[in-house]
Picture 1 (tube, rainbow, N blue to C red):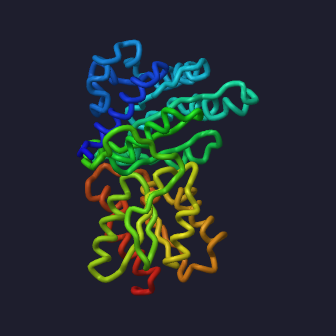
Picture 2: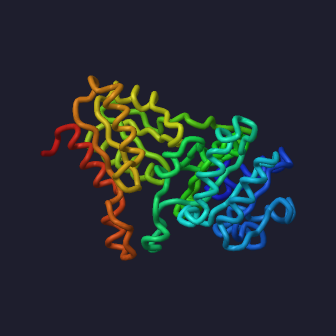
Length: 327
């Protein structure tokens, strides 16, 4: 095991897969000469050259389309968006071309492509650069959507995404690129669609993914000081969702709180709530509660950002409410 930054784990995943398979290449804004906007691709141009680490103009629709076409013709592109906020410019290629290619061609064309980059809030970047798009892309058949929370998972899941024959949306966080964590030595892959129980517990289930896992785990630590034993599940993948792990946990704890950064309407948390009430209703001792981002565009002011985002205090309050410890 080694301690790596999140960005280093992503770099290792891409580098190992590019060494393994000459069809894999990286393309996006500032990925080559500048070593990546967040230094995720640092040193990759020197190793693989300009034909496999490719700088693009500020034209997401254009280079996403090039990636889709390359994947149709047997290559395995990694397309980096500087932020998924900018992917809206390219969403026609992602949704109307890549996601539908296998279906529309009657299975004649697969589209093995990874669209990756940061999602969600990242400090004082205001409304147009701070949106969480996980539920948007998870709503589209044909896509797989991965949102890792730590370096080890990021590496194993990105390697699986690059090898997958379907288009994959791989969502990171600007605020996590410097996070450090222990990463296994040698070759390893983590299967897509399998959640992970980060903390075992008996009193309540807390489900989250991505950087909100920090909030969920911090809340669980504070709850433990009050003898409340929370089980914390990291979805890791939000399409497909590992419902089985969540439902089995709810059958044990009888209570569920879901923590998610995005807006409340049509969120991943909403989908999980539906599935749990459908398949585990008789096990619930309280209504499912969600701790979400506020239903407004994210403001610029730090005080308003704090009010907008989920935090441990809000999670703790929700846990105590499902346990009937507060009115």
